[in-house]
Length: 316
Ligand code: SF4
Image 1 (cartoon, rainbow, N blue to C red):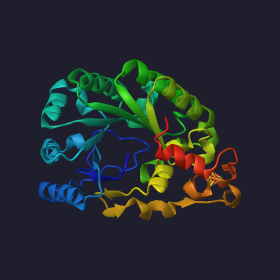
Image 2 (tube, helix red, strand yellow):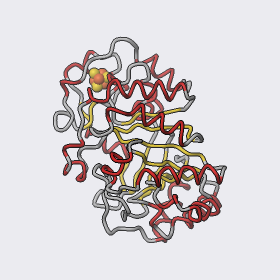
Image 3 (cartoon, rainbow, N blue to C red):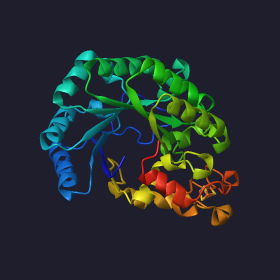
Image 4 (cartoon, rainbow, N blue to C red):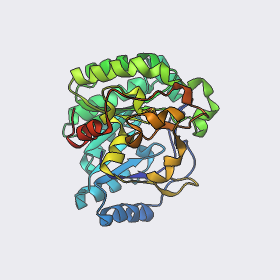
């Protein structure tokens, strides 16, 4: 995605996701501070745009003004949302009028019961579907989907892609993001934590399906030994190869951080020393705490040069 600033505008939320990585609190940024943060990203010159997130950013009454500010300055903005408020046609129209151009919808499962359980909201999937339909009807909005992989959806990642292809035909990009088990919600719900082996086959099936539907994709927080043949689509590897930077404004005790400061959360195992991809693989997140190093294995079927070339040439 290039170098982007992440901007949490509120930590309020209208769902209670079991695996939320930025759980609800009472914090919202003041409008003045928010505009100052956006301006700092713009004047830095090193950022291609801003990703507006939360909590649930559509709950902030300032969202339309932030979108307008970015549009006026020609600074690309992307909204990450759970889609619940965009199920309202009037609200979708309001954001489009304010300059909404790119939306990333968060989806967990094409199974309404699993989506409802993970989101703490039985209507969640139906609202996400309505949001996608509203945005498609409005036109001119680029639509992507992000799926957090966890124990409850690990066995049907490819069915999720099928659902997207069928119900959200204008989606052209999907991100599979491995569960962050260190965040307090997921830590409180250990039943959501999977093993890497649980996603192995299904992730490859899902990627095959994305490719056959001509959709682009990225995989996040997954070590390259679980991405055979599509290593170049690892977000972290692309960041290493392209030397991209990411800044995040958290509305909690973390405050403003450069993503590189979070790299210490990844570990490397003994087998990584002989792995051909060691230099361009970020390793295993939460190693030997929540995810286990015994599941790693060195890669010999490709080289770091081959993967880097695919990254730089934007290979499909
Ligand atoms: S063995 Fe280690 S370096 Fe190699 S792909 Fe797996 S996690 Fe990455």
